[in-house]
Length: 41
Image 1 (cartoon, rainbow, N blue to C red):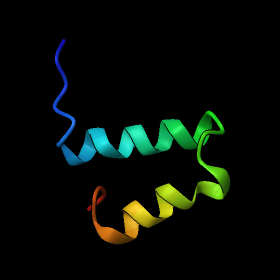
Image 2 (cartoon, rainbow, N blue to C red):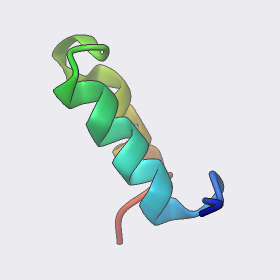
Image 3 (cartoon, helix red, strand yellow):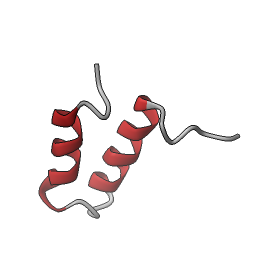
Image 4 (cartoon, rainbow, N blue to C red):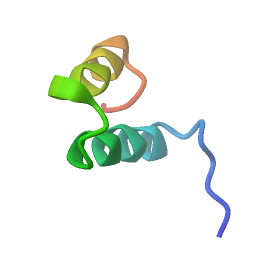
């Protein structure tokens, strides 16, 4: 399976995965990406 890394849903999954794995301190990258509209509705 090939995934499109530019797809907003996939980007959201990537940010969430990094946060859950502890690679994103205090979820700051996740929060910043959401506020910038990189994923979500």
